[in-house]
Amino acid sequence: IAGITQAPTSQILAAGRRMTLRCTQDMRHNAMYWYRQDLGLGLRLIHYSNTAGTTGKGEVPDGYSVSRANTDDFPLTLASAVPSQTSVYFCASSAREGAYNEQFFGPGTRLTVL
Amino acid sequence: GQNIDQPTEMTATEGAIVQINCTYQTSGFNGLFWYQQHAGEAPTFLSYNVLDGLEEKGRFSSFLSRSKGYSYLLLKELQMKDSASYLCAVKDSNYQLIWGAGTKLIIKP
Image (cartoon, rainbow over all chains, first blue to last red; front, side):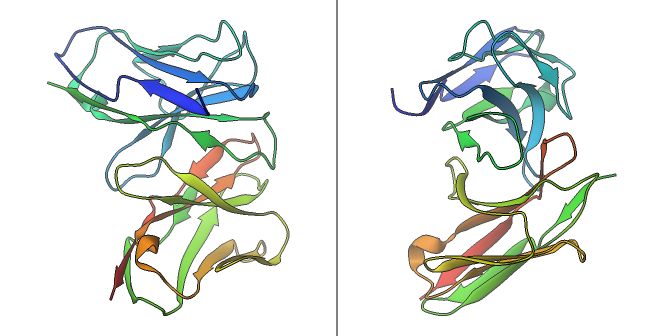
């Protein structure tokens, strides 16, 4: 593994189903983030974690949950998917929270909820 | 509310120079980032400005004026591979990144 990986690459999901998007990084970064990207809108932060064992809510957290049991993994769960959650989801990490810390992004998961 | 504005789309010619502007209104300021995103791919870091002035990195330069809430990304000697979206993002007082919707840059031969 080099950098950040996400799985699955894409998924079509029936509304009401539960889904977990996986994210793993091997850079030993403390901070991790989940964003969604929709056409015409900027990246919007869903949840973040500044260090293992802690999580926080971003701009659009409703309908999503996260956990951070260890440094490397940061899964995002949709408890009961709805069509408005159709989006491209990016996981990102940075060395630490703070002013200058560039974020590194995974390749993204394209999710369609029908 | 917090707001980042950038043009939706720009067109330029191979070999030319293009300037992509970004204006922002955020609660606090802890730096401004520019990212490049090719279609269907992840964003990748281009530049970071926290002090006023110009930062040059090869063919790409980024400028910041904090008093005007304004930045631009300057791309010189445009190549076809520069066709991408360019995302402006500001770190607010909570150190969260607030993202613009991106500027799609189309390069013509």
